[in-house]
Length: 280
Ligand SMILES: Cc1cc2nc3c(=O)[nH]c(=O)nc-3n(C[C@H](O)[C@H](O)[C@H](O)COP(=O)(O)OP(=O)(O)OC[C@H]3O[C@@H](n4cnc5c(N)ncnc54)[C@H](O)[C@@H]3O)c2cc1C
Image (cartoon, rainbow, N blue to C red):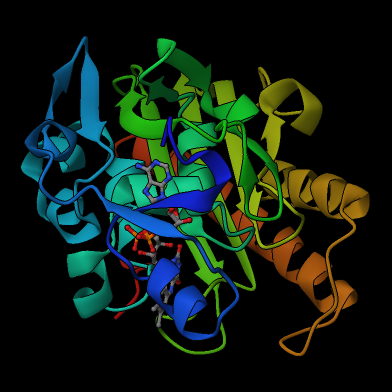
C-alpha cells in the first residue's frame, strides 16, 4: 500500500470488491490479499469488551459466544447482512472499510462507541473513534496507504439493553432503513441511550439520549414514539427505486420507536420481544 497508494487495493472477503471489479467500477492496478495475515483474523477480549481483527469473517463473529456476550448488538446486526454464504466470506473489517451507506455494521460500531485501529507501514498505528471514521458514500478516514486492522468494542454497560431492527425489500437485501439502539435503564428511568440509523444518509446518523428527550424519563411507548418523530423530522433520506424519501422517513420513525422499546425491555431483563426484528 505504501508503494502503490491509490493504485493498490486490499482484498478482504471480496463480497463487495469482486462485484465492483467484475462491473469495471473499480480498476486497481494491484490487489493485495489480506487473507493469509493470521493476526488480522484474531477475535478476543479487550479490556471489558472485545477486539475483532479486521479479517474476522462475519459468520465467525456472528457465531462467537464472546461476541454474543460482550457485543450483543453486533451479534444481532450480523444476521441481517446478506445470507450465510456471503457472511462466510465477508469480513467485519471489509464491511466497515467499504462504508456502504445502507450497511448494518457502521451503525453498530458508532452506537457502541467502538475504536477502529488503522495502520500504515510508514506512520504505524492510529486509533479512530467510529463516529469519526465514516465520511460519506463509500468513504472513510482511511488514508491511501492505510489498512483497517482491528475493531475494539467496549463491553456492555450495566443495565443496558440492545436491539437492531431493519426493513429491507427481501430477506438478505441491504436495509432501506436500519436502526441500532442501546438503552440503559436504572431505577425505572432511562439513564442513557444511543441509537444510529443506516440507509437514511451518506453515513450513519447518530442520536443520543439528551437529543431524543429520553434522559431521566420512564421508558414507555409514548416517549419512544416522540423520539422517533423527532429524528424522522430531521432526516433528509434519499429517494431511489426501493422507496421514496417520505417512505424512508416513516420507516425511520417506526423503527426508532421499536428499537428503543425492545432495547429498554432487554435492559430491564425482559426478553419477551426477542423474536422481534430477528430475520429468518
Ligand atoms: C448479494 C450480496 C448481498 C449483500 N448484502 C449486504 C447487506 O445486507 N448488508 C451489508 O452490510 N453488506 C452486504 N453485502 C456486502 C458484504 O457485507 C461484504 O462482505 C462487505 O461489504 C465487504 O466485506 P468484504 O470482506 O467482502 O470486503 P471486500 O469486498 O474484499 O472489500 C470491500 C472494500 O473494502 C476495502 N477493504 C476491505 N478490508 C479492508 C481493510 N482491512 N482495510 C482497508 N480496506 C479494506 C477493499 O479494498 C474494498 O475497497 C452484500 C454482498 C453481496 C454480494
